[in-house]
Image (cartoon, rainbow, N blue to C red; front, side, top):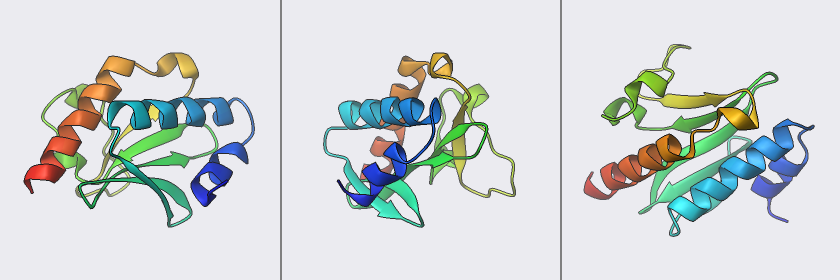
Amino acid sequence: MNPAENYIVSKPEPWRTLLMELQAIIKHTIPEVEEQYKWHLPFYSVHGKMHCFLNFRKTFVDVGFINGIHIEIHKEHLVAGEKRKTLRSLRYYTLEDIEVAVLQDILKATADFNKKS
């Protein structure tokens, strides 16, 4: 098991299941994504550039997008805050919170942005 997978399976339920579902959606949506472990978090790279990461934060899970400020769709779902300049995230408190179509749209949009930049 790689360190990113260790991070996920080491979390308590229900967060482990939530993280596993998000990981599966990321890998399914962007098949060429590379899973890595950086800054003690599962990171996903596309086209050689950091794409997104998963972060368990005690009461929720963030899917953080490094260049999230450039996302032009579903802005109403993205969280800025915490003195973030370019990073934006989708925040999930339960498995039912995941709107798969929204997450997939944003994953594809950020992959396209990374490819062009």
